[in-house]
Length: 202
Image 1 (cartoon, rainbow, N blue to C red):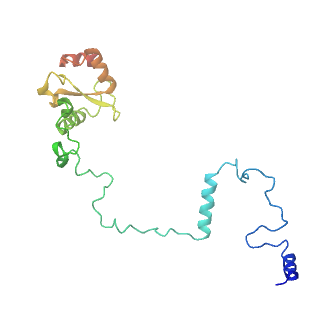
Image 2 (image 1 turned 180 degrees about the horizontal axis):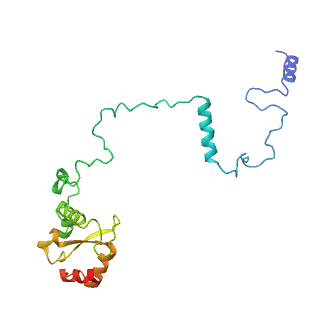
Image 3 (image 1 turned 60 degrees about the vertical axis):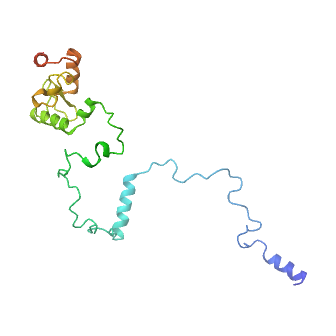
C-alpha cells in the first residue's frame, strides 16, 4: 500500500466509529458532570397498591394463569402423616424415653437438683394440668382467666411437704400477681391451708 493510499483511507475514516473506540471529534455526553446521575424517580414515594393493580391488569390482559393453579404436590398426595389443624399430636404428654437420662448427648452424670427434676417431670406437668382443669383455668383469688398468666400454688409448701408435692388436692390455681402477693404476705416456708383460707377471704 502506498503512502497516498494510506492518507486517503485515513481521511475517509475521520469522524467515524472504529470498533469499540471513541468516535474522533465527538464530545462525551457526561463531560463536566460529577458523580452519579440522579434517578428519575428519586424522592417519589412508592405506591404499592398501584403497583399491585398494574401487575394484575397486565396478567389479565395476557390471560396469565399460574402454572401450578389447581395442581397438588404429588409428594403430598396420599400423605396421612402430615399434621392437621385441630389434630392432637400422637406424642403429646408422652416422654421421649429414647433420649432421656444417660442416653442423651448432654448427660453430665445427673447433676440436676432434685426440685428441678420434679418440676420438669411428666408427673408434675400432669399435676398442673389437673389443677387448671379442676379450677376451670381461673385464678381462685381474682378470677383472672387469661392464658399464660396462671400458676399452680402448693397449699402445703413444696419444700416442707415432699409427700404432697404431686397431690391434686394440694394445689390451687392463682394468677401470677396473686401468687406473688400470697408469698409476699406469708413467705415461702411453712405455708398451710389456714393461710390460704385467710388469703382468699381478704
